[in-house]
Image 1 (cartoon, helix red, strand yellow):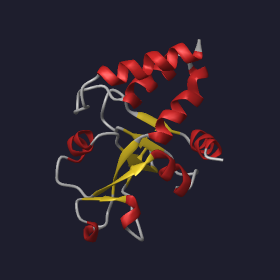
Image 2 (cartoon, rainbow, N blue to C red):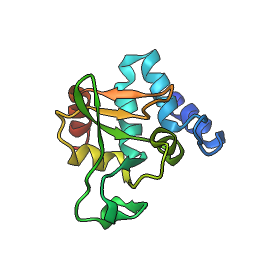
Image 3 (cartoon, rainbow, N blue to C red):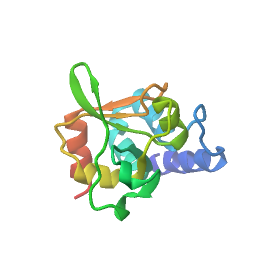
Length: 149
């Protein structure tokens, strides 16, 4: 059954057009699967870890879009939500631009790199302001880090 589901998922992604602000992405579909069946958390984690993401940064010297490996230091933007700092991440450049509503510096970075470098005590928000917004709790971030081992 798992193999059938993964095959269906891969086929669905292959026929989907490139994601814009309103289009579904691979992470959106995995999020829907997770919301319908919380036992699919490890499936969602694997999709997240392999995804290329857009991380807004507060580094004016980094240019507009540098791959994460090209910088010695990354200074990600954090937002406050419910009185607590959160890392902000997007799965498309269009969603990031719509959220920022201005030109913003960013790095393209794999989910596994974010999971490996960030402190798990700081929650994340993926796709803020969209219908597929996901908040990662410290416990979920620890699961992602564990999946990297």
